Picture (cartoon, one colour):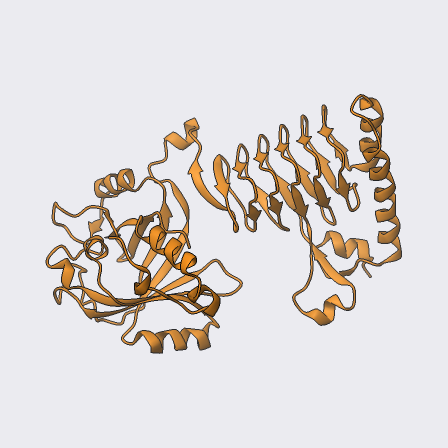
Length: 380
């Protein structure tokens, strides 16, 4: 039978009030208390305490007091790690920090997490998952890194970010939740023609937007987020391939999130397509599974030229005038939030309108009939 400590290190439910674990936390508390009472010129004493506290201590590690951790022995610190004032690490599982990592003040790393079922929390049960930060990273002040996250090499996390999922090598990522905003200009990255930043959504065409919302609420327990009813936007229509009479296109669009995933559904009901053929290679009214898959990208103009040069690719409109188009400015009365608080928040609506009004996108169909959308600027 596994001990509570073994369960903890295996990311299984464990009792954090177990006698062995309590004793080990008390040990870490005493060592960090000693450490936090040292002065800056007492480097040998600090190093000695860290060697006793941590599972592995690299060369030239500097941690500015106050510093807190739960166990210490789960900390794997590389060479030249620097942590500024107020860093706190709940190392209930292994937290590996690579060489040359810089952490600004008040960075928190939480390997521990609690079950969502309150009855388990009342029994003092929790989980813990590993966290890894790659070499040469810079973690901005006040950032929070959650359980199970891996941050790639050379990456920068902006101040105040909440990192909820893995972040790759060589990017700048910011926000809550933390998202990629820039790919760093490294030699390997220069060779990439397509600089993706995230998965955006999958699109499904429906014949009744309200019925579609209710259907996916029941089927997938999806959560409706926002809706654009009777949406009429020339820039949007051109990007969707309607170059003839784009001002006549009208449709309703709803976005839903599927809990526990990073998947967003985009439901569309066309009311007035400009033409029956609509430059979509098939009737826009046709109900035929997933209409397209959308990816967020950073370099949309370059990506458009690259996709055009690839074999067995058909742009959604083959006219020479087709290109990535920007959605025209939209007003707050064109969108509704399903959340009552957000619906009443004029600033939230205005921010969403500004974001969408800065979105560029284009469509193409690949060899196997999959329709893709590349979009730049939309923040889900």
